[in-house]
Image (cartoon, rainbow, N blue to C red):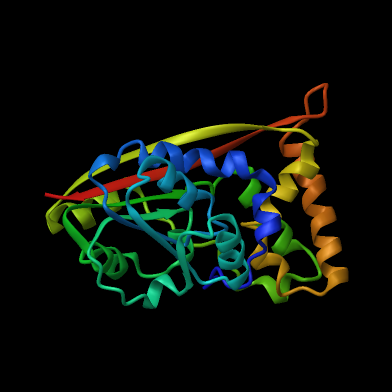
Length: 259
């Protein structure tokens, strides 16, 4: 299973504005005035943590991430907050927290059927677990990753690559509702205009979905994979006259509040 280890904060934040918008939409459904203690799990370079601080400036806020590079970037961004390197799957802090935020990270963490009840157990009375995950495995971006991986000279190296965990809103509702929480679920498709055409789409995905495909390959194989993938993306997402493309990006949102 892919983890967030050795992520590249600089590459990830090339599209900071677009990556931060979903977390703003997510926390808009949380009564932030009631949040006194919050943690951002899988905080990345701190952009989502910064949103928490803006909306709950009096709260005690911290963040964890399994990537030292991401934690280093978060500490530089928000030096007054507490950040630590930790793996969500083995994170043992008992809290209690008024808010546990997980922005575009749980798709990399296995066993949601045991993980999510464990996270709920770290909430204070009336506390909220709020997370969003990409829901784009059927989009051309990710379908083409799998096709390029299976059709090139690198196929044997990539045959076991998986693109993260995926469950439906119905699955999460059925899991969480019996655990004494109110569940709010929705799905949003963002349409991101990207200057630079197919190259911009590839740069976006080099920071996330392409990582498990590229990491097993040597530099020559990576270059070949990216060239083939870029050509496929250019066909799937035709550029407008100004060279830009519109990238659809579906995301699933879940807000579970203890009642």
